[in-house]
Image 1 (spheres, helix red, strand yellow):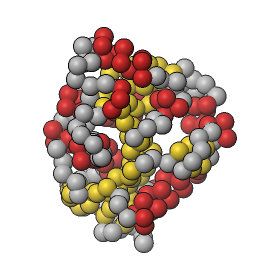
Image 2: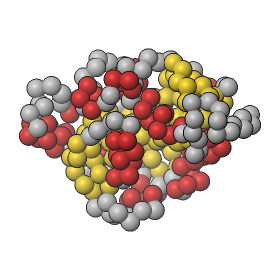
Image 3: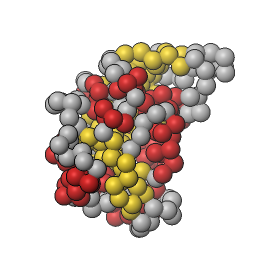
Image 4: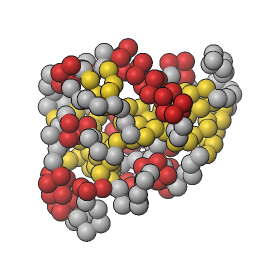
Length: 223
């Protein structure tokens, strides 16, 4: 399907939901796989993780954003095998030590960690104001707490500009660890360190993102 042509004065309605059917999951996987391979030369697998061979794991669940039935954006949710552990050698003991230092250990623990990753926007829909909105919507409680209770924490690995984008929409985080630039991260063609950060949903995510109900509609007025 060809993307609609929008002018700067138009608004559009983004339909947001968790991918449920095999067809929806495969569509999300296909969009991620195509963009990651074209941009980074990285392949995705359901079974094996080998950064030296540029193979990473598919997420366990997907949030999908559609406009007029066209998939325009998706975000993955990892329930385990998160990138901070695979790439950054982050351990549960390190997470719990951080939580203890911050006096958060009575509220949350490393046992309930999750990760949002593999966020992509379809080429034709970039630079239209979609990225920040979809990033915010991906922090809905209905997605990050999928399968289980509401005690999950988010451990994310990214370059600092991504965390600055999140801060610009009100989502904050705490630095746990910095990973020096290395050959593994050269897959992402940036010679700079990455950060591992912790987000505690009910502290760090504004209610207008956290309480967004899925499935739902989000209108972007201008871009």
